[in-house]
Length: 461
Ligand SMILES: *[C@@H]1O[C@H](CO)[C@@H](O)[C@H](O)[C@H]1NC(C)=O
Ligand SMILES: *[C@@H]1O[C@H](CO)[C@@H](O)[C@H](O)[C@H]1NC(C)=O
Image (tube, rainbow, N blue to C red):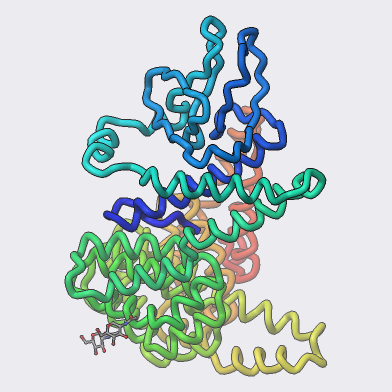
């Protein structure tokens, strides 16, 4: 939730008057109950004498006193006359020399009381004093109508009422998204503004409900249009919103696929794009396919693996390669986990349906046919441990269909051999230094498993 943007003209002013009134209302009640209300607004009555610094404050509800004067505090201390009121957040003190109450802006107010504000205030009267007076009078009447015992319970009731009224001033996520989408859809909106809107949406759609609401508002088609845009920044940010919206959100995943997201993502990947766009599009693709066999099947039948292999071959830094390999690995392992879990779920119909859907995803065979058994090993040449790890895990996951190719892949055998040497040295030197060895040991284990599994170790040939 967000407070409404209050930098626009008259509406904002009536907003702040309302807030102020609510605060006035609240602190008056607090004061009436004899609580200290140091920073908050107080209605002060000259209690006569007063020298001596007693901090007692009292509201005298005076029948004749219909007019309440509101003193607007400044940075300087000002003397409060009897019966004068000050806005909430003001700093009130008792001057021990004069016995008079003094007021100035509170700390919070001072912090934001910049030159800019001062000029704004000059041009636009901050608060309508008549409205304030009316409100104060109303509050006094309310207070009078309470019997003393009942008034003890008043604050809670008041608080609830105030909260309900405050809610009216707070924009809900739904309202924010409606506003953002309308702005995004407007022809007068600039690219910069659209980028900001996408960033705000990306933040909002992390909440499952918000992402679904965005769909029902028709936001998905706007996002897909953004993905199709000729502006690469719009493409990148639209892909980011899409990925975050579908991430772990089956309802949105289904709607996105129905809305053509898969084809748009594939088309974007297939055309030449800057790295940043590709990264985000891959992210969105991975989120869309995750745990969604229906989408995976269509990804395969739409030539997804072909498009990815072109991306893989063209990538020099290994960043895209790693992301692609990770995505493929995730897809293979989620299918395997489902089939393994099958033993425990024999009677579960939805599980059988999942199994059936996954059985239609012929990922492994396609991977072999499209040349991935020899593509993934290339990632082992990276200098990044993390990238190599992703490659090793994917190689293991693909072993059931790729083993024959691994055995005849001289470059892969050479990589495994030299990586094994390198990691055993790293483990050695870590042991000498007495450091944690877990990560390199893990890498070593991955290599060993792969070598044993595929009989790839030099000694076993
Ligand atoms: C965008 O505007 C068009 C017409 O101006 C409207 O038909 C469409 O529903 C709007 N889309 C959204 C998501 O608000
Ligand atoms: C994206 O553009 C392609 C052709 O350039 C078009 O066929 C497709 O419908 C567009 N998608 C959206 C969501 O606008």
